[in-house]
Image (cartoon, rainbow, N blue to C red):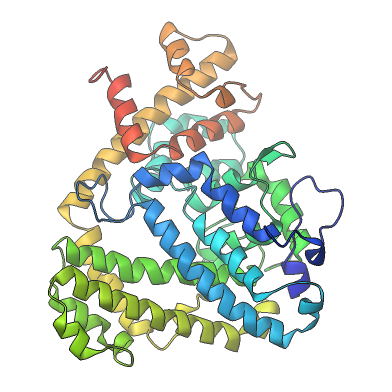
Length: 444
């Protein structure tokens, strides 16, 4: 892989190549990606989607929206620092008009959208969709689908749904992001099958649905991503900048979820300094720390220092492995290779024990399973009955609840089911709860 190709400004539908040195300097090509994501309805829905505590009643716990913005800020810093070094190493990029800010803009945009495809109720929302097809009423559709299409549903993946959201549309509609940003977004550039139990980071999940397969091929071909394996297995090595997007996410959820847990009283404050000390020992001002009057201020100070340390460490690991990444010979996350791996794992384990497995979280995730299964059932049934021309009056009413963009039914049952899954995945937690109450007759 080479950086000139990886920094592609191409957008869906382009007939001519976009050159960096011919871009409008007042609004650079990659910065347009960031702007379009911010103004999208899918991004807005993140303001009411779970990050740590589902449907939290406090005013300081992070939502997917605030988390995504913080990941984007960290990602921009990572991209700019790395970009400066990459351009120094490959001076021809500067001659083509590229700057270190381009790297920052690409990573910032991809990081901003990294959770845009996640369903309501956190990661349990993905599992709830999968369970509906695996062991619920959705199992009846298996015989109508190919193995890969079926796997898209039973292993529903927010990353693949995110790629669907970012790639849909045409010259006149849709986000039409640059291929560089789409490449950086894809942490798992492979399809749902075959599942490969390897240690390579790409095999951890998958990154696109069968409905986006052809567009995926166009993107990876344009970027020159290196195939991970030969044969019919459609899997590629990551775009190098996706490692920075992943690092930004890892840094934020590791440190900031931990901070949320302390502020909520789920984790003792004493754990903050105890587990962060190795990350902040070179930068902490003990006198300043001890002068801070409130717990929230002390934890905030430690969080800022810890994030700064991990940014520098992620940059170090990336630059040391940059050539291996370009050759497709690097297959683990950056933080898995950093010198603070043990401390990071300790913090994550505490968050799992004290936050993610807390009664408050588990109870609301259980409710999410029921809500999502019921919504899937009524909308999939209604759309299929409408297509078959045999709808009940109830089906007709349910069908009217769908947005206009979802009422033009495809001849493909896979496309119809995927449309419903994406529609429900795009709901905020609050709207999913409200709509479920209405269709179950418990609210009007």
